[in-house]
Length: 114
Length: 114
Image (cartoon, rainbow over all chains, first blue to last red; front, top):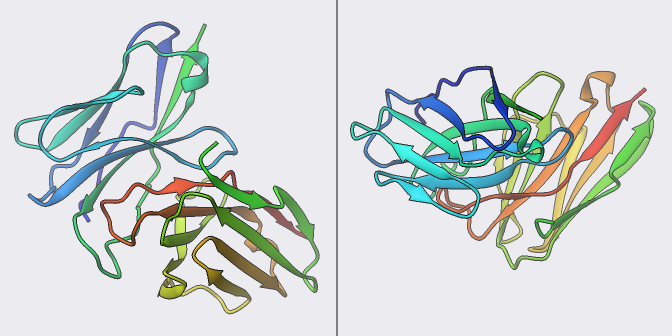
C-alpha cells in the first residue's frame, strides 16, 4: 500500500472548520483513501473513504485532488469531541493476505479548543 | 456504540498467569481482527479471521493464541506474557475480509503485565 504523510498535530477553534491534509504521492489507480480517527483510549472509528470523487457524509467531507496525490479531510464545524488522532490510509481494492490490513501510521493529533 | 464489544476493558496480570480476552460483534460480519496498540506506536495487526478460519498471522509470538469459535466471537488467549506485551488490544470486524470493507472497532482491552 502507498505510504501517507500527515502533520503530527493541528489545532482548531471550536465551531470552525478543521482541515486535515494528507499526502499520498505514490498512490496508484486502484487505491482508495480512507480516514479513521481514534479518540483517546478508544478504538478507531471510521469516518469516510473515497477513490477519485469528493465525498461527504454526516461526519465529514473528503476532498481528493485531481492527480490523487493528496487529500483533505474537512470537519465543517469542529467540536471539543472531535479532539482525536486522525489517520489517513490508502488501501488497494480486493481480497488477499496483505490487502485486508489497515496501516494506521502516526496520524495527526487534532486538538479543538474552546 | 459500534456493535463490537470487548471484555474485560482493563486487565492486570502477572507473567505466569493465563487469561483470555473476548470480543463479540453484533453486526453479522464475516471477518474479525485482533490489533495491538503499544504506547507511542502505530496499531499493529495481529490476526485475521474470515468465516472462523485464520487467514493471517503476522509473526505473533505463540504466547498469544487466538480462537474464533463462530463468526460472532473472537478470543485471544494469553499465557506467560512479558511486561512489553502491555498495550491496548483492539478487536475489529468487517463484512468480508477485503480491503474495501469498513472495519468497526471495539473499545479495546487495556492490558498491563506485571
